[in-house]
Image (cartoon, rainbow, N blue to C red; front, side, top):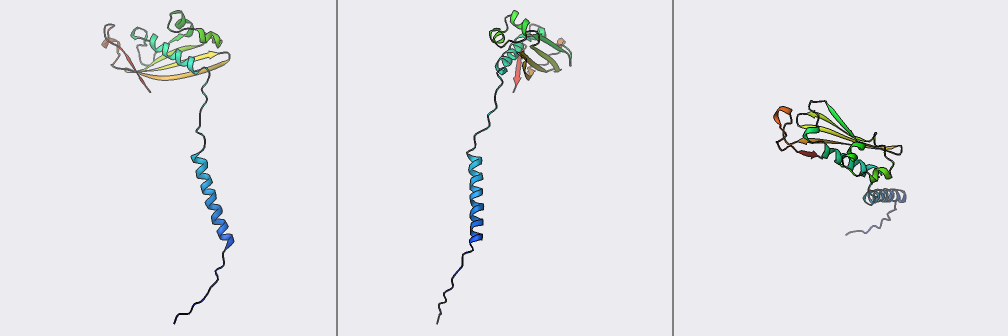
Length: 156
């Protein structure tokens, strides 16, 4: 009733090798992406002392020292901050920093926001950090007296 027919299948080696090659390539790419080292960015050797300068500037710029008008700015250099004991100068001396050319500058952006800029110049190299500071209340001069609790909150 049924007749058995034996048919020999020929393997198409070129097609099989092509498919196997594509599969290996895909697996290799996935492994390369999954196990590749994460990118790390080198931090400038001056970054930490620039961050210290920025923080000292934030301590210095209290209500009395802030610019009053929008667009106005004030600057204080590293020399003054060390003289007034806002910052210790050991690391700045070790890095041969320029005390008059390293500074913190604060600019009034609007009634509740300031831009603060710290720049350190040491041994022909420089580092800059820019941050934004928001006040918790409108700091128009007529709205705040020295008796008010005036404080900053840093925006990350």
